[in-house]
Length: 90
Image (cartoon, rainbow, N blue to C red; front, side, top):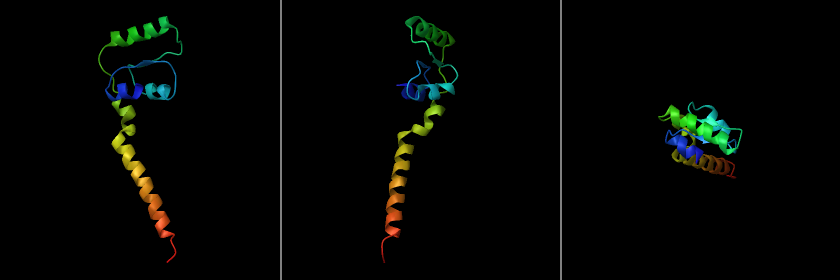
């Protein structure tokens, strides 16, 4: 959900899990709370909502675009097949 929100340029409030910390570190207007207490999360959410507006998160997840990832996977397969066929005995 973090990546999807960033792709929509929506601000995110999260606790550190998975890649959330790395994703949010580069996006101004998002908050990462190391404190999981409801009060701490509510305070972080209030700060984000008071700031208002959208963030520039799309850039931080652009490299995860499914079209780009698909092209990379296809390229890997083509490279593997090409390498295999070039090693085949004549």
